[in-house]
Image (cartoon, rainbow, N blue to C red; front, side, top):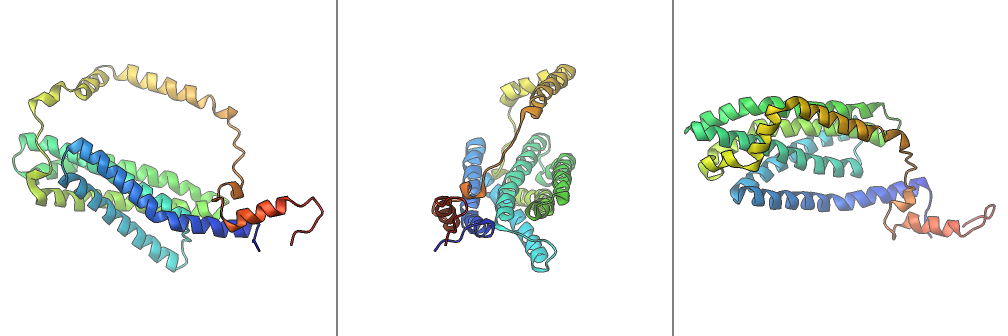
Length: 261
């Protein structure tokens, strides 16, 4: 016997997300580790970044668990998976920004603590602005008609607050404690890199850059009226072996008006 219908499909969907949470987290952390190893060519720095991401994830999960247990915010497997990936990605971005600024400050400041204080002062505004924009944008989902989307907005907003807090408190302390082994000061060769040349070009022609970017965005937005999303039926979004999929396929073999038992 196979159960079909929206309720059975939702149960299978929740089971699928519950089983994939560990896989999502492992893939996200593995991808971050490989990228950071290629960027920094050091083992310690990627481990510190991952430690910060895991702490932010633990704080976000603890807050969401408390809200879910009190009945204030329903959390399902889909929300958990999205929060896992977003926390790892955002924490890594903020860590890269802080590390780059700290590296620049170390070039003119031998004291690691003073260099980190200056790096935090310079990094805090963009990090807080980024986290705040994402949190405010996600909170617009609270007006959605779908309960899952209404819960996703506050969940992501809480997760972004945790990312920003860890990136500006725990990670700076960790970098200072580990000392200069994590980062090396920039050398004179860094001024001739292609990224430095790109930054100089953008700084010398800011008007051309923003006008060109605006035109590209407008060209892409002009195609928005052509978008006619029809969605994917829920039974097609589930694994082939899900019981509700088998029930749907069996039910489809009956002619209209016949009873499927």
